[in-house]
Length: 628
Image (cartoon, rainbow, N blue to C red; front, side, top):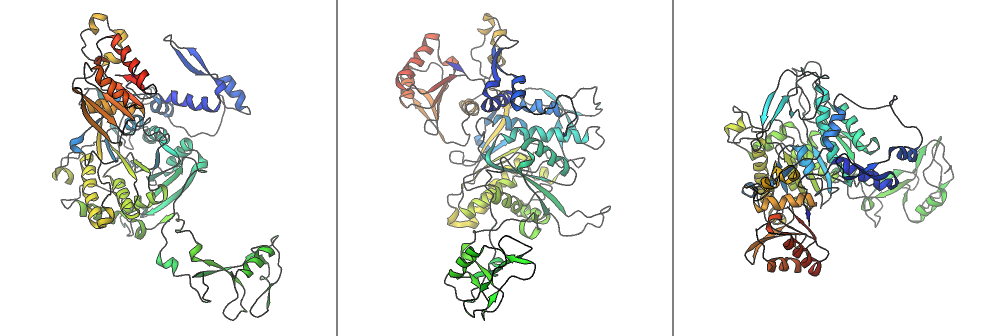
């Protein structure tokens, strides 16, 4: 009976998997330094397969900075963390499919790797812009002291483990000002990329401080060929006369696809003004249409053949130095189908008819997003004040209408939408609003570090200890407001969320290094699970490792005196009680779950474990069984 690992998968292992999928002949098995058999890549053969020129110490085009290699290594490093469910702070726990996760977003992204691998259709993030005062980071990726000397910093102490980490505010005085920001973003984008579905897209809000670097980072991680656009957002429509040189009235949203050839890009809704350009002067039974010139400038293989008006018999040629857009055969077919208009008197230069009824039900968006269409800084503040009349509790929020447009373009009705710089949870607000409008079932995942609100801030005065409390309360208030305004059409709208918090592993150190303890020491450990952990803690830790979505429904019931948890009708069944009776094991096995998990200490002896395996072989041979 295998044990759960209770730590995230190594990014190196995942990368070797990708190489093995493309070039299976270059992956082999070797004995590692610890004596265990592990997989390795035969680099010489891989180079031969790729052939051509390859770089080995020579000059090449590359985007790099001090600390990039350390950032790559940190992104791939596994962690021994978990997500602890917090039902008390959740809304509609039993029915919602939305998630709100508190903690360092790099750790959260790693923890979600198995459960949400390739399942996220849209990512929107509004990361720190690196203005010289807007982000605090943990200096936990290693850059040698011989490279940098850092004079200032403060200690962050983990409440649970007591571990202390240096925290820094990235100011322009920092000798690695841009490098630290690039490393911080790179690690997160590197891990987040694997969460995107093949047709997924990512939107990144940014301003002029790091627009150049974010493009290079995305080219490096996502591929320059998957670039969609840089949208220019008009964030304000007034002029700042106190600006040094130019009053910057815009910011940017950078958009990339996971795979540009698979990307399903949405359309914006047509407006009445657009439709008003179509009319029906000849009472065509197909409805309103718009005249489109039949000719184009320059020479073409389509030529300059004559067209005869069926009403007047007049012969028409395209203007000088131009040609008909269509071949003669196609144009004759259009004439027979009454798709060419010669004016009211039949003598005008012919135009083709573009029927409104044949257009796609939407229009492609422009790269310039004006404030009257997607909102501004002022509208965002007004939106927050309407939800939080107690004061300006969150500085510089984004308007939900801005992210609403991103979701409209980058998601579909059943998509998972992720924001791992959640802030005031504007993305959750926008997703719920869009679902109310089009009947969608989009699910959101919000991730936010619980940064403390300064004691003298409006938020602290209103009773909010950290940003996460603001975000969760916004979702509650915005969800109820959306349902109220939408009425019966939003009766089934999901405005709830399950709260999870990043925590140290559920397992004691002995779980990971039992070989280092003497047998008499092991006997002192009644259990290898931390005493303060509940069944729900253990259940969701197993879901994370086994790659089961955290939003799936689950039930708990008593069977022969023990508590049994069932996820999504049988995707996983768990029982963490001691001394589980054989009758309960048989009941679980008869339900034939895909996966079953128990405590290692639930069975007093090796023969009991063997008996459990035999019961499952008999009643549910396809079930995978593990213990913690």
